[in-house]
Image (cartoon, rainbow over all chains, first blue to last red):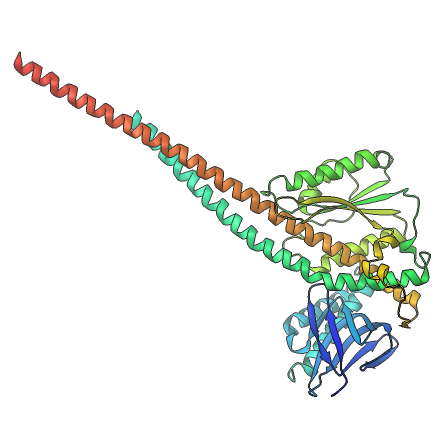
Length: 137
Length: 302
């Protein structure tokens, strides 16, 4: 039997995913890392990017995330993300609208640059994840 | 004259009935929104619980001096966050929470208020209007957020609270809002939010398990705590907004149910009066006819 661990992806608005998986790749702030079964207890901060989940049957699923945390304990991993979406569920027109809004704001002098840049990065990330993994499902 | 009276009552019956249809529809809408609001409260729990747990772990390990948001300061300047509704027609919902806010100010922060050391963040149009009228110093404009309440609202509010706390615009933040207990008994509470009290972080889990796992931290625990604390606060604010939203819908449902019942009672009385009047006018007409016929018969005999 393949070695699996329990993974949950939680956002403030819902439990996005819960189930047994083989591996999780996450964009740690100090570099991408991969979790397998029986990983040592860990708390890690993650960046804007993509989560890659591999299931026991070999299938993969991808999630866009705007950053957050991963906690691993007793063969359970929890991803805490303020925003995360499965690649196939990303609302592309909305992400494009957000992208344009962020670009617009970066051109205006009065906007908070850091916030606009963060919004730009989030929108770009969602579009990238949707384009690369959205179809595969 | 009796005919005119009857027409008036008929008109009133029609008007009360259409009011009743509106209050009944509003009650149904509020019930549907309440259900949705309750689901949202439940959906936020797993995330909120894990975040609190992590913050608790880190604070337990690093101690309460680890971050400025944990630092208790003399409450020279105070910010009150008051959450009411955007709309009325929900019974005493707004009046009650605003009264609690004002009582809190009078009993604990009267001096702060006089000396200009009290600010209010009024969430929801009704709160905004209330505190503007009383010339409080308001922080931000949070009208209209309950039409389409989103997590970003909680984030924007929390960003402002945290920035003000770190820049010493205020030394303490308290939250005044309605917690949704049940439809009949909402729970109005005043809750300290900032500085974060370590005691509020330790759930039952930590109390019972003596040994903690030794975590690897990436990056270091201090940086993680600094990133986690604002997210923890955002969830607290988000939950308060959701609770208040649910309580508001519950209050509106009850208010509209009462209004619908009152309309039914009014209709019953109006119909009774209407029928009585109608009966009286028929009787009167009959009497007139009979009297007329008798008069005619008497005239013929004579």
